[in-house]
Image 1 (cartoon, one colour):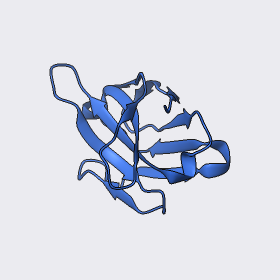
Image 2 (cartoon, rainbow, N blue to C red):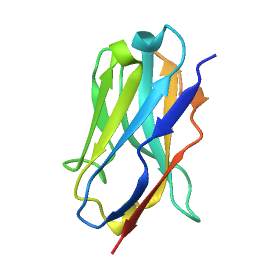
Image 3 (cartoon, one colour):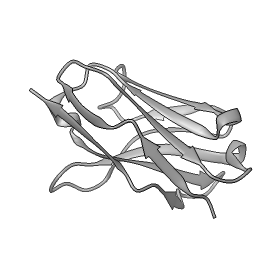
Image 4 (cartoon, rainbow, N blue to C red):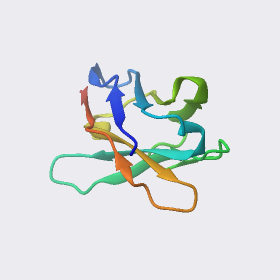
Length: 117
């Protein structure tokens, strides 16, 4: 069982930046693929970014050029640096983890990101 705890959400003005963090329990973090998803009010949860155990990364079109995902295996932590935030980035952001070759199985509780105009 992997437990995920997100932090770093908050209220920011459009054009600002936030860095989300997600720390995983256990001793197998370096074997996990990690991802970030978000869910805005009234919308379905959507993919934002992911990073594999071998540090290959992927981004949704909405995140390309503005968001950067990274991981620190020594700290069991994955980060999402979000720059040039837009009002439409307002959502609850969820951290997810999964084993190589499998879908994301473990989910955090979510952290709220609110971007004001």
